[in-house]
Image (tube, rainbow, N blue to C red; front, top):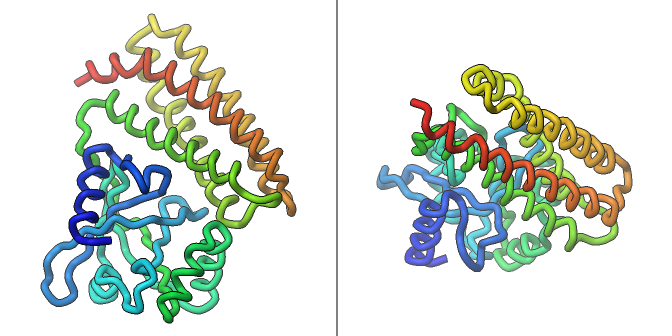
Length: 278
């Protein structure tokens, strides 16, 4: 990508809190900021990434579009592995670790299974494409100041990820690959964690301060329980040795519909109240 196009994607990403237009509207993107190996200046690059089962861990591949040379950002993080990650709503510090040997080969094989384009990039480049793990090294920060807006931002991230996973499953072959299983499991983990945090922290406080929300809270708790059942059913399907694509696709479609309706209802009733809180 040219510098001008990179900047266009960066501007779109920040303005849309992680959402961009064609050709990357259905891609998982992050912004990686590294420190120049020679200049010491900060440089930001939009990159596609691979989710990982370990919470918060992401992998990026130094493909440079099949160029025979490693991209500048890779040289930068080899010199200074302390990097900054933007996910759309959140910014956090991370530690970059270049994978070696069997670990690198395993993650790259997962990537190729999910998208053969990675193998074509490697063949065109004439080099072994480095795989880099980005491990969180600090708490996430956000520019959003109102609590309701923050909740909507988190919900929108789940909407986007569910949409990506749904399309990935629908487009896959008869048996799901390893990376696609990981993608499904990561969104399951994220939703489950988010709902547990709401049930133990946000909902009890709102229920005490706003007794008029009693019926709303009852419905939200009930929907959390139903979504938890759907998540467990999907996890069991994914845990099978030969997960059936059609069955997984049906469960993902069902889960997506339930989650989207739940998020819409929650936002309708809670966002105005949360935004009014100091």
